[in-house]
Image (cartoon, rainbow, N blue to C red; front, side, top):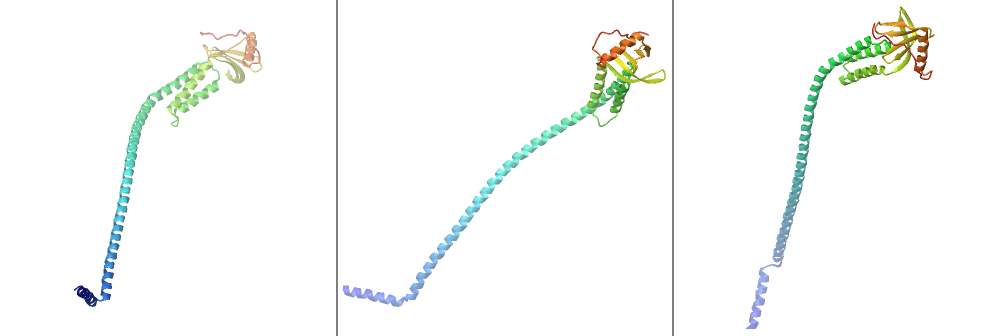
Length: 256
């Protein structure tokens, strides 16, 4: 019985081999391998697409975060610009207010400066006639200064005040200087001696003649010979040609 079974199985295998040709079996295995290979390739391509999508997603996220940071920076910059513009607008408004105030101040100050110069003219005209050319030149300079549009009101005021200070100093100083004396139709070069604003004298260059200005009479009074000698010493002291000493000089009359 066992022998019969083995013989049947062997016969069956032979029959199967005869039914399925060897090349067909090989083709069937090759087709399966191709399917497996194609499946692997499809899986690889799918993974590559997934990888590309993942990389694109990371890039998009990075770009989004970067854009978000740029937006924050831009917003901060814009806030700063707005604050700067607001500050400049406030400064501009303040400057406009200052300019308006300056214009109002100029309108009030300019007439005052004109009055100051006019007063200085009258004062010099009524004062003793010392340094006539120098003082007249200073006054003419102030007259021209008032008409200049390129000089600020502050600078005009400074120069006018400076001229006042010079006049004030004349009352505190003692000096001898040379100048022209117009008298009785003549114009002579003489030496002047000024004792502040108390007295003004002249003496000819040769020392032969001297005079004292009498404000009340608005004319020169000729000095005596003794007074002339005393005046010569006083002029030498003022010129530092002699040591200071007490001198008896005549003074102008207070009343005519």
